[in-house]
Length: 202
Image (cartoon, rainbow, N blue to C red; front, top):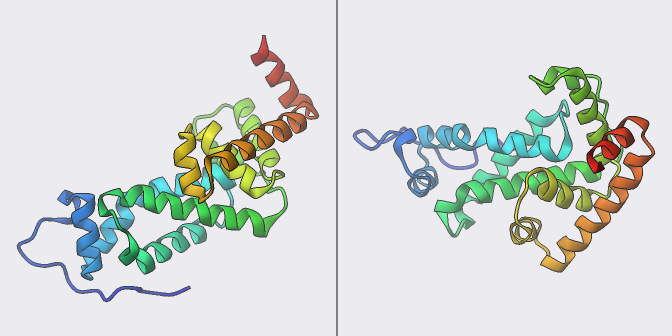
């Protein structure tokens, strides 16, 4: 992994403080090598990027490394960002692609022994459901898993998902439909999840 990927200089004296900058102004300052603004870019968007990684991949132990990769890539490619005001959605796109890469490289269901520690306020039954759901998601084709997660868990618009995944709207619709079919079939084989599905259908 690379270290600093833009030349850094101290924050300019007398300018606006990083937290008060608009996203577009923040991007301009980072491109200019402002260290404080580079740190602010991470502070402002790291939480959303990590949440996206967790949504797609689950509570994997290496998510800190994936998050680091996301921001290394963001800083390396910030010059190519055409609309600085849209930097958040651009970083989320990087997080989505990094998560998909991880799913492709993993190709196995994750261990969920620590789901309770990450589930926070969820009760034990809900935590169990969460773990089983993500174990099944990990068995889907990675592209289908990403599309399904963005649509059914993140509730994103189809056009936004297609753009984030770099494919056509028709392709995204096919991936979601296939994922829903495969996920439902697997869930019906799990006694716990089958009971939850039957309860929601009543």
